[in-house]
Image (tube, rainbow, N blue to C red; front, side, top):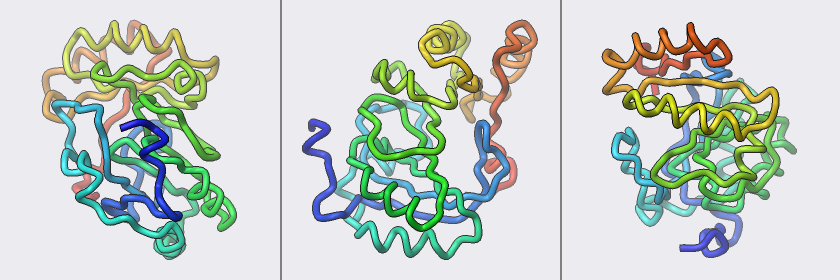
Amino acid sequence: MSHSEQNPLNGKLPLMESFYTLQGEGHHSGKAAFFIRLGGCDVGCSWCDVKESWDAAAHPLTDIRKIITQASGAKSRIVVVTGGEPCMYDLAELTAQLRKNGFQTHIETSGAYPITGTWDWICLSPKKFKKPLQECLQSADELKVIVYNKNDFAWAENMSGKVKWGCKLFLQPEWSKARDMMPQIVAYIKNNPHWEISLQIHKFLDIP
């Protein structure tokens, strides 16, 4: 399905879930944020922990105004749009309404599709299964590479050479491999201090 075919109809988006929690990963880790998780993804990561998000048709098309109302109930003014792969959809209207209501707009994307909308923070987590667009790499404020095995360090360096100057660089162990990969990531960052570690603190805290 093409990007244009994936645009929401009549101001609606396939909302899988929305919830208020702490950002668990990356540069903004530990901050309170309202999450909007959209359904639909064709990147197909074997280790994805939200595979139920892949089928967009399984999630109700929800009016953007309703999504904004839900977000407005949270005390934090940070909204994180994630998925699935949220950039399968035109997010211009969503971000315009969020910003109009005083929110900082953050997105988590694989970069496999063009990024639409207006964003205060773009977290790009590229995947080998469907490589990111160069324009998305250049737009990223944060590059977060998931480390599943030792080959992912070379992939991370390849991606880091394509982002803009000043982009934050993070290595994050894939949760099921964390025990094995953590020592390797620590050693790698000590030898390559332009990287930082990202941990899924929400999983340690057992929160959404």
